[in-house]
Length: 247
Image (cartoon, rainbow, N blue to C red; front, side, top):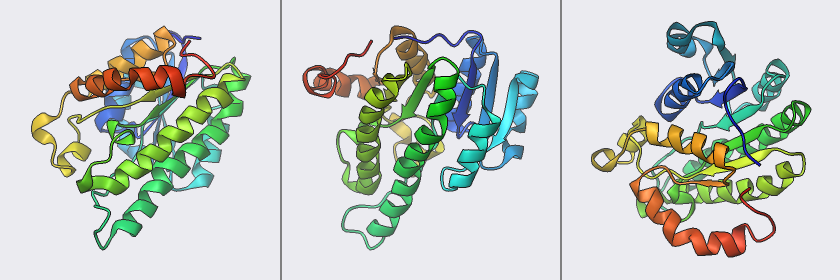
């Protein structure tokens, strides 16, 4: 199973900045017919419209608000590729006073938001021939980091859910990609204190397009991510993908 972006209708959450903005630019460069820029405030997508014209359709969507996800799925009924990029990081350690509150917020967006997106858009993708669903996870989904352990926990849960979606959505002919970036040059990396080691967001967009074209489940965009991917390969092949395949 593989997916080519040329001529396809796409949707990207968190499209107005950071990795999401670069993904939108890359989709347009790859020949997407239309991209729904799914953002909390539609005005924040205006720069994308200025850059790419009417092929960009701003769309109100907040992973914290189930009603906006349901409404977006009804509006974007022609979508063939969903890239769920939006997420939050609270930088809380397991023993910090705010750990529970931080994890609750991160689970709401990073996990429950993913579930809501999958449930809302699965019927849309099926109706449009299957298409593809891409989830932005993290190397933190495989290894916890003490300074932001609650974020890592939420991403581990997100990755687990993405594995389930690989098989659930695969039954309807929908390709699923789990993307695992390391430090990427965004506001989130700055917030996590990773600015000096962060790599360009374009690596994430390139990895997504490559994984879609090759029919691969995992995408490892940057230097750290590739190191994780190499170490994880045996377990991935023999356990995670044991009941299916990356194709």
